[in-house]
Amino acid sequence: MNIPKNLLYTKTHEWVEEDGDTMKVGLTEHATEQLGDLVFINLPEVGDSVEAEGEFGDVESVKAVSDVLSPATGEVTAVNETALDSPEAVNADPYGVWLAQIGNITAKRELLSPEEYEKLLEEEA
Image (cartoon, rainbow, N blue to C red):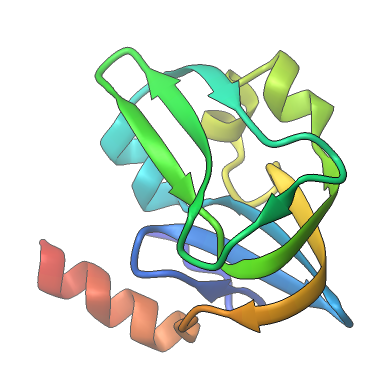
């Protein structure tokens, strides 16, 4: 499984790309494999406040509906329309299609390095 080295990860299988004081958030390859084909994505609106470890949105697949948890407390500064319009794009390129961007960050949840995330996946297997 491909685990990009330039990203950070959550224990709930979201990836995080930090850029200064903003974070882009997406679903890991592992998450998309567990969920199966995504058919619907529900995300917050630009300007919405989010809480670290709080529900950030949800993704619906042919198998189940799963919550996406926020990696930080802050404000949604952008939402990826491609992910909303074409959920299958997330399955096709999980690390290339982000879901939302958070700015004005005041707190972060614990993030894992690529090596720590790889270890977590091995423990869950």
